Length: 404
Image 1 (cartoon, rainbow, N blue to C red):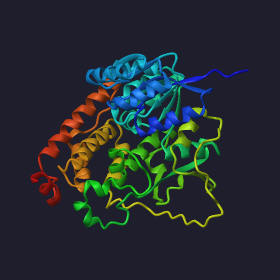
Image 2: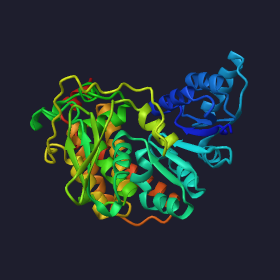
Image 3: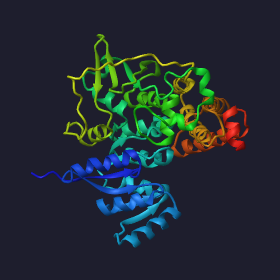
Image 4: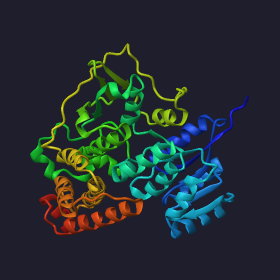
């Protein structure tokens, strides 16, 4: 009997996770296809994807991007699918009956509503967008429980944890251990972090990623987001999630069981493996990733993170313990602060200072809808922008850049 093709709605098709997902789909033409491609403003790449994968639907950020896409498709003689733009069209693409799997890979909260609605309908969701659970973890996980949806993590650490959890019962788990590469400033003295430049922060030693996530990795904020996400994915308290610095990035996650046994997930640093795992689960299909050569000599190290040097990691733990909308504000403020750092408006250490002050000023409430979450996100960004604009977190380096 021939299995029917599973069609995907890909939220964030032109990003790094999106393009890696399409590479996996290429390898399984009889098993996976594309129902909808959802992108932002990279219309040239989206047009290429439409030509190759022939989706039934394509969605972009706004009217300007939509006009640009129509023009490019016409110029190239590519048959246009059903086209749309904005939040409502993203939701339409995610909830369509034809979409058997929704890959949530839009950076930021733009993909939150579409992912939430897919969860409400009981769909399988490959989750590569941390902001979904960081901003609205309680609402999304409740929707998953109510509908019977499948929420399969695509981040390498959470995907690794998901694999480790299969080794025993949830009641037998004592803690989850997430690994962090440590970023480019792992060995940089704390007093020198004030003067680091965006170029230095973007020089990640292990992964090639988008700008925001690379800066977040340099500050360990990304690991803080992963702690929050892990709490929702695996029903853990913050104290049950430990972070260790593992520069070699071979061990992605470990689960310690009540008897002291530790199960670790080890694989190459290639995102196609966790993407394919999410698409084919519970099957383990052959993946196009390098295999580890165990005959080669290797040394793996594990060290505790420096919470004083990287205060954003501590702020993430604190926000998750506080509950309510604190983690939503944490994410919104960090996005504004990272953008300000990249533009030379604040120093690297100003990112954490901006986030902490925003958390203090906004406070925390318990949101009861995605609309309320998005309003908290908007308010938090507004406060963070005010803090950035005050100039209090400029350094000598950023002040000189601004004057230049």
